[in-house]
Length: 372
Image (spheres, helix red, strand yellow):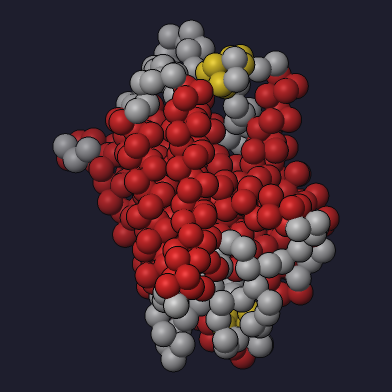
């Protein structure tokens, strides 16, 4: 790879742009050509997602699309952003563990506590082993720098919450995948603007976009073609990687007084990261609140998710996905333009707008019923 970079340097081609271009193309193609084979094997071995209480589909669909997502990301990041695996020694190992747990759960349905143990292990590896953690809250609730122990615990919990949150929004066609593309694009643009030291993270974001776009081609197709779900494998991998990129994003803005590493400062960095990931965060908190209010276990399956509420309004999967992403993209826009106001006030604005989006479908549904 280094010889290849030397060749590009001699030819006058910017290495970074070549990596971005090839990373996108190859990640898309690997996923695009892998999924039909996965679908064929899934149908032959009856490795399908059965319609259930929480399901919004009526037929059995192959649910091992996450394997193609891992396959593509594992190959392309290793080639075009190999610096990440040098800097973060446990990153690839964490992805492999999530792949194993995800596939096991998609095939035989693992018990929740076993998945949680695996997620704690993976989160601990990346937080403690690779030192990817939230070191400061930048004044949120009056808290600035966190002690090492608090930082580690808080970061591990953040990883676990986001991994499971992305799993929960994967309930209709295109939502988890489409939102992952939006989040990766926003983080990728941010990393690009923050300097060439962060270029490997830009390439990672581009690779995620490429592989998920290829997955969406099949996920949004009709039932007579190679339709596939990403399953727990895909949602956990994407949740983990977006948690990883968001914590790296926050960490960039902490001045560590390292002369060889450019650092930046944005007081609202954690809130901007929350705004980008607001959909899975709000959706998860909302269903937990509703279940506790109804005196049910937070782990009981139901149809109180935002996407279920839109389906209740007789919207299609594609329209529901489009409206959800559009609304929460608006919140990111608001957070960006208000990024220089008081960090606590900005957090309140983002969270209030997030929960408004969660309850807006309920309001529309009641208004419709009252008219009828």
